[in-house]
Length: 328
Image 1: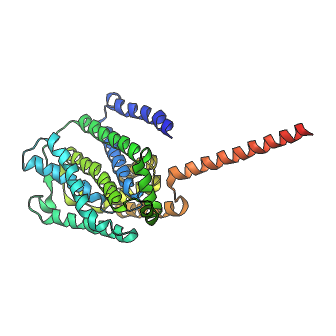
Image 2 (image 1 turned 120 degrees about the horizontal axis):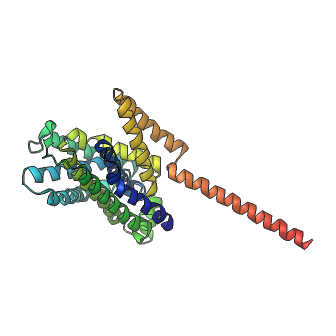
C-alpha cells in the first residue's frame, strides 16, 4: 500500500503543482482550488467517522469557526493573513476540546445529533452577534491572486494527507482508533483510554478543517453564517466519505473528486433545481450504504481481492493436477 501511494501520489502531486503554469484559465483554476479544498475537508472528516466510528455532523462548525476567526482578526484586529490563518486552526482545536468533553461520551446517533446541535448553535450565534455582521456577513479585502490560493490550498491538503497517512496508517495511533471503532469495550480491556484517543481524533479532524475555512474566507472575500456554518458542508463531506470509502485515505479523495465534479456540473446546468441536488445527495448515501457498504474504493479493493483469491485457487488446483499427473 505504501509503494502504491508513493507511485501514484507523487506524479499526481507534480501534475497539480505544474497545473497553473500550463492552464491559464482563471475560472478552471478556481474550480480545481475548490476541489482540492473539498478533498481536505473529506479526509479530515474521515478521521473521526471512518477510523473512530463517530459521525460528526458538526464538521461544518469547525470550518466556519476557522473562517470567522481569520476574518475577524484581519478586519477587527488588523492582523496579517499569515498570522490570522493559524489562529483559525487554533480556534477549531479549542472548540473541539470544549465540545468533545460532553459529546464524545455519547455513541451512535446520539453523538451525531449532539454534534449537529452544536453546529446549529454556532450558526445561531453568528447570526445574532454584531461582531460577525449577523446575517449580512463580513467582507474581507480582496486579494486577486488565484495562483496563491491554489498553491496554499494544495500545500495544506497535501500536508494534511501526509500527516494523516503516517498517523492513521503507519503508527500505533491509527491502530488504537480502529480498535475503538471495532470494539470500544475491548479496547478498554486492552488498557487503552478511548476518551483520550477520541478527543485527539476530534482535534486532529478539526484543526485542518479550521485552517481550510480561514483560507476560504480570504479567498472568497465574503462569508456569512449560511455559507460557512450551514449543514451542507458537513452533509457533503459525509457523502464524499461514504461514497468513496470510510476508514481509508484514498476513498475520501476519490469521493470528493467525483461528488464535487457532479456538483459543479449540476450547478452549471441545473441551478434552478436546488432541492433536487439535496435529494440526489441523500439518494447517493442510501444507495452507497445498501449496495456499497465499504464505499467505492473498498468495493473495488474487494473485487481485486476476490480476483486474486480466485487466481490463487486456480493456480493451486493446477499445480496439484500437475503433481498428480507426474506421480502417475
